Image (cartoon, rainbow, N blue to C red; front, side, top):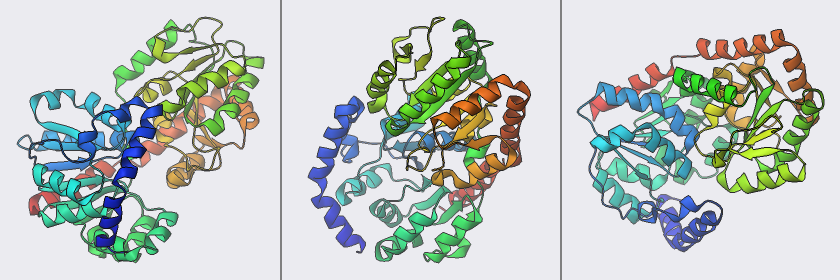
Length: 427
């Protein structure tokens, strides 16, 4: 299938996209809002640079890069786009001052419908487009290229599975990839996959992952320590089950019940991955007989509270900072896992299930250094949580190992900025 057939198909599927938004809005009300942006019919100002990060994870990785571009180019205005409400909320939170001053414009990226994307690109008229990680859309790349904008794929990832899927759609994918001015890729293996798909090797630069350049504001850590004091859990075991999915709820609850049997004052902070899962998580906790408070209700846990349900958006990093150990979800189910670097950066011992393909290199680095341990179920997780809680030296060693991995792999930000600056000069 080439781009013309793809465009016809996407256009015909427009009613399905409306139904998709309606269905998503039943679970997450944020999907009821800002539909004009999703179909490219909101009036926008032109800006020199467009940066797209699909959701919260990509947005968090992009924040240092965006801030550096704003510092280095005070004459430029940036349009920042996302496709998820969580990513949007993070952008608004991080760049509220710049949005107020007009230096940053934020909207949802429209669906890849030809007329919607063409109107969007015509209005924004960027000189440079930076797309984070893997969020490539044929019409977006085509219309940016036709408008004379340089398109850079930054912090690029391409798993073996995705590369195989791309191979099956080469008539659509190869022309899109060949329109990219530069690809700042994370690893040598991923660089080889892009080249095998027909990308000119001169376009590809191995830069490492921006996720290793994660820095945590000291004020966030201090705030987390203050919360823990308020909760009266300074000396009690506190752990986070972060970005967990419904298929994992019963396993992490079983792990916590195992911890509570020996450490009755232990506290679990349970943070579901998606807002539509918050109520189900609360129901599952209640059915298990655990005493919990919902973070959204701003109710401080009491002495008998066993779980804090993190049913708010944008607080996962802060909640990680409250804990000593963390399980990172999406890994006990066949999903691909979520990013374990955030708890590692905060000095936590980290655990994941066996399904971590989306963060393969990062997970293996943390495992090799002694920070991250794989578990197969809730029972194994509970045993490890107890062991580390009862052996502070082991816990400290695991914590230091994670921070060592980040320190040893920093530098991607500088390398990726170099690639982007080169394209800015050529635009």
